[in-house]
Image (cartoon, rainbow, N blue to C red):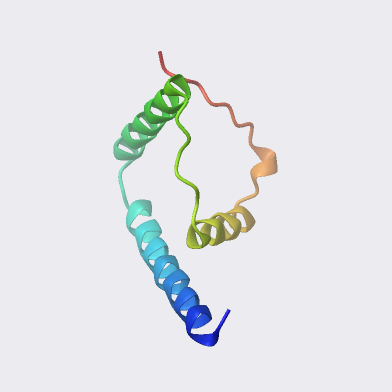
Amino acid sequence: MDLLTTLTHFLTVSVLLLVDILRFWALSARSGASLRAENLFLRKQLALYEERKIKPRRANDSTRLVLVLLSRLFDSRGFNFRIALLD
């Protein structure tokens, strides 16, 4: 890749990462009821994806970076994750 393409990619990922950080801070200030409602909506969306056999969009570089950073921030080994699909 040439320098211009590399620089453009770096700037794009940096801006998207900054937006994700700001969104994380804003979401951390939300009420518990709002978070439960969003969780319910996301579970329903996941159930629809599985029911219709639709693949969700692929994650971009900034999303992958945020997931890696968050995984290092939280210790998920102590949690039991279970996805309950809604009917």
